[in-house]
Length: 505
Image 1 (cartoon, rainbow, N blue to C red):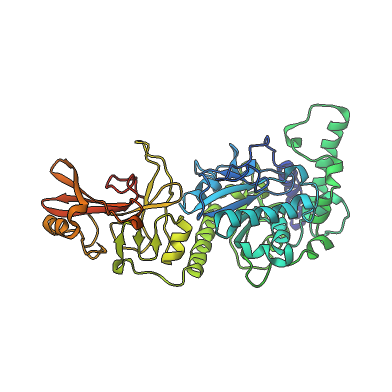
Image 2 (cartoon, rainbow, N blue to C red):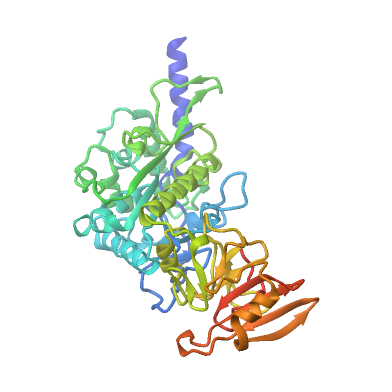
């Protein structure tokens, strides 16, 4: 009986594996897309890094998505890239954090080469450095399969200096110790742990090759299966187990380098849906758990073996797995928080600062959001430079942990005004001591002839302070007076120093 169960299990495993081969070694490629257009820069400044989702903004963390062997950027953005039980892709979920801009790296034309090739590793290293300089923030990389090894090589480029531009790397199914499927593909018979699976793989390859040689119509299971020449490529040779290509890669930079989070899928072959098939541990059916985790304590997703077109524990579907997708987003948030903690050592207490037409304490009008965050030692979350329905390209953003009712007004990533709303504390005041609740009479006495009445709307009076000294460069403070008391005010550039809401987040 035991022999019967063993042979039956092996036959079932072979059939299940055979059905998985076509998807395991290939992902459909998409047509080439346009390059990302970054502010005031040539369109191709970061190589093939293409913005995905939100518009790029300086001061927001770039998250670079890197595909694997025989794949392309469409795996992250295509119509079949949505996370299970969701109407969103992994890129969509990452973009919702509000402090990231997603990019995809494209090396599909060269994916048959090994990661040390200039068209892969060197270009990826240059792209990472370029995004770091443009965003003024370290890059986070999310990589699938061979893309993780390409990132490892890129991080070690230039003596490890590129790795200093990366805050974190999250890998999905990366074969840090090789792929047993790649070993089967080479047919070197070195991996004795998977003879049944290798036999099924070879049978599938031969069937698809024969269909191609005879000119017959390719069955669905052969779509995307690389040709015999492609299976003998540098990439497959490098990805195979027990080779020197992976072990010769320089390790992740130990000092100043990224935090690396390897994630894995773990398929579980079962007999009649009850008993696990002993001795068959093939990870995500392409890369074992041991190889994908590289000995780390990381997140794995355990699934029963099923249809590879729907099984999100399957190698090419890991980015669609709900658990892994949420883990990726969580790791990204952790990396951003860690980076912010390191880059903002001295926090400024804004309640103790006074507002002038030129700024507030270390805040100066004209600063970018990144410069403002550095000056304050605090995050300014949100999406600046958002065109509004009334044509005013501005955004009111709060300071994380800052005073309630205080907003920094940005337009095209430039601080143009500071707004104090009716919800602010009376401790926030101008340099002359005017705050919410100050009597109208005190306001007039303080600023004298340099203040004028601009309008009266529904009982609210708008009083405009226009200092004449040249050092103020024509900037103003506009006060909203309600029931003879200051209710709100805004200081800065004339066009933006009013109390109309710029859609604060």
